[in-house]
Length: 332
Image (cartoon, rainbow, N blue to C red; front, side, top):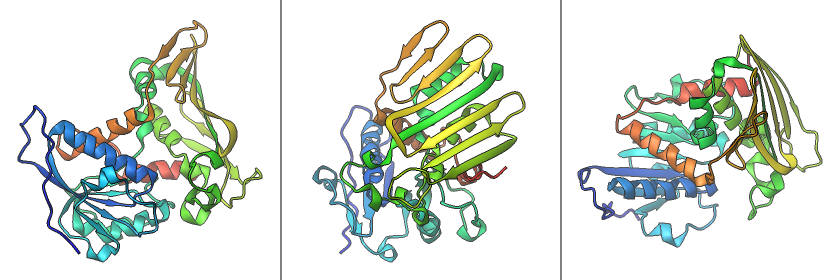
């Protein structure tokens, strides 16, 4: 039974925005959905904004944390029952459901935050989504907001780069401690799984730093003994005007490795995203940021709300998300 939206406001010192109330819908409440919801609550506390939050879910997921439930107005298990007057809808359900979810809810909300990747395929028609001209459709890709990538963006002369090597290697069975990896979407290609699309972060921040490559070659497939039907290895070579980029993505590395190596005339710079540091190999200089994962996740949520508030431009809309997906799929 739907109950009236109860405006909740955090009591803090800044009272400038008391007249703004967000009506928010959360679709999908897996691990990333829970993380986003917690971060949204933290941000609304910081901004002193009042809000109403509904959860729209299939009912097949884990129970919602009691600490979060106190902030929830309604839970809908049937998408058709959800109201049609949301300010923002967060789409955090499995990738293969994104297109139909956007299509179904586009008329029910002003803006959308869409978890990465935007879709599981590039063979989609945006015209049939009937996106609103003045609405914000933001596609998440938070690694660009890490202190490592921001440092590289702001302090390295990227025009002097000869070559770049990127790796993201980890062991899929250890990704989600409370779930059998064989039952996750990552393990199944028909659910939008596979390293090529699952680890789209790497190509997002490569594009963020260096722009569009001229050509992309890709080798991918299932090579390990993991019990999955999606690709567990994807290797790219990309051609730019003045440099080349190599990318290695896998599901079977037994030690987590996530870094970008930048080769210039004067030094080799390593951006280590696991250990949150930048290392200059020739000089030996190390810059340690000590950033936890949730730090850059919060930065992205802040950025999204700044876009909604008209303070910043939408730099990762659906068209851009599709452009990155084209590269990921090996499309020149």
